[in-house]
Image (tube, rainbow, N blue to C red; front, side):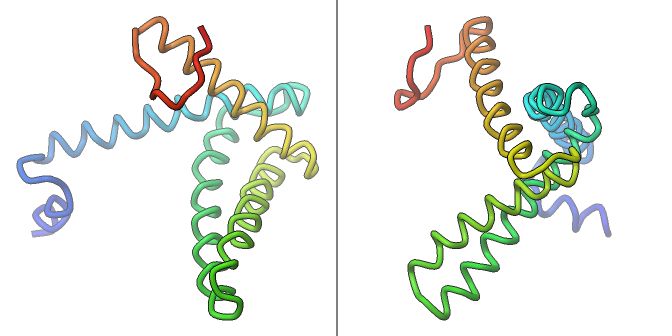
Length: 145
């Protein structure tokens, strides 16, 4: 009964094996996405950051971001209207930096440096993997090679 309820959330015909494959794939993707944050944190913290802390940051950061974004937009939006989304975006980004600050044990500038460096590393790794595997970038993405 429980298996049927869980599987009803996923596309029909996925099955338990398919669900396990999806979960394993998500864990692998989570590890890959953590690599840029880990490398950036290694640079900023002088090599003190661990891969586990990077994985924690990449898991908790987006969760905190979404919660703050929707909560601020909902509550502040009732007070000031449409401009609340800009405030929500800013506060959600600061909350994400707060997660980096707490997880990696840095200050606010260190957390910002990790975020910026992680984006740069992500773009470079994406370009390298794109060249290696022949993946194409969307047309709006600037050509690096």
